[in-house]
Length: 190
Ligand code: SF4
Image (cartoon, rainbow, N blue to C red):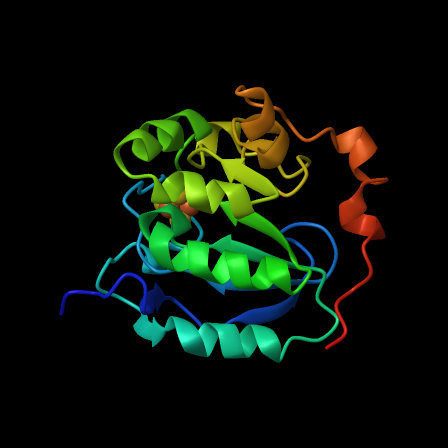
């Protein structure tokens, strides 16, 4: 079945809540289905199949966001959310209006997403909603449990709004990060 990109999203699981490892604070996580990167050592190979998981109405995800309590942010993971930018853009826009900060994990590098955006402006629209992008494929040889919120050292924590503003990649400053708005922001009480 051809997926209506603005009505459905293919997910690997229901919206998770209370994650403390997918970004700062207590977070909801949207596990998207489908990934073409096939990184060696990937922890979620069951999310690679573009026909796997289930097609879920975007409206149902928005309803699940309405039900969230005590979450400070929404993280898009997978799979790779960048294969479904239309649906993720709609969900991110809704979540942002609800006061959630947005983190996105992708196997694409920021520079690769810029190239995709030249062909399809929806990528730029999605980037405009993202606070932090964790970019790049997982590299087993660079696996490092000590790096914050990432699996391997090559992956970057990118401050997307500053990056868009400056026109060059701006990394999140991890030392300033503890003081940042992400931790200071009150959890969301619905
Ligand atoms: S990008 Fe992420 S989900 Fe995709 S193969 Fe690599 S580690 Fe797995």
